[in-house]
Image 1 (cartoon, one colour):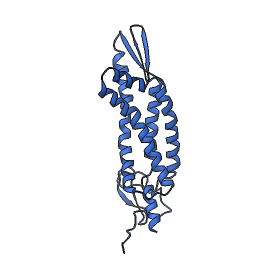
Image 2 (cartoon, one colour):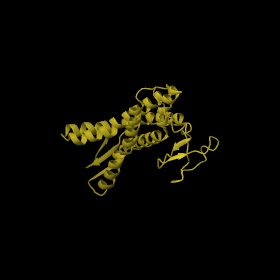
Image 3 (cartoon, one colour):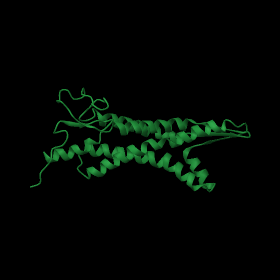
Image 4 (tube, helix red, strand yellow):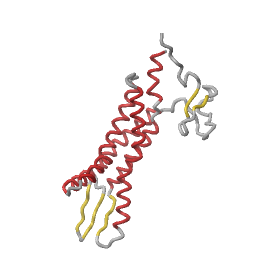
Length: 212
C-alpha cells in the first residue's frame, strides 16, 4: 500500500510568497497575521480570493487587448506625411520590407505572448475551479512559464518609448506613441497582476482532496 505523505498545509506550514522560505504557521487563527522571519512578508496558507481577483484582472486585460490591437501604437510624421500604425500593420510593414526577424519579434511579443498568457491563466483557473487532477506538475510549470514570460511582454512598450525619445531629437521626422500603446501597457500590467494573484498551490488542492 502506497504511503500518502502529508502536505505542507496539513503540517501547518506555508511557503513565503516573496522569498519562498518554508515557514510553520502558528495556528489557523493567526494565519494571515504571521510574518515571514526572513523577509517580513505576510504568510498565508492560500492567497485570499485568489481566483476572484485573477478572473477580474484577466477579464479586464482581455477587454483592453481589443483596443490595444485596433488603435495605433505609433504615429509617424515625416516630410508632411503622417502615418498611424497598429501592431499588426507594423508587423505587415516589416514583412513587406523583408525584415522578417523584426516582424517575428513584434508579433511574438505583442500578439502571441499576450494571447497565450491570457489563455493559459484562464485554463489554470478553470482547471482549479473544476478540481481537475490532470497533470498538476505540468500545470504548475505552465504557471511558472507564464510568470517568467510576463515581464518580457513590456518589450514593445520599451521600444515605442525609446523610439519616441530618439526620433524626437530630429527635425525631419517624429514618432509619437498612440493610444494603442497605452492600452497595450495596460494589458501587460493587468496580466502581470493576474499571474501574481493566482496561487499555484490551488492546483495541488484537488490532489489533496482526492487523497483524503
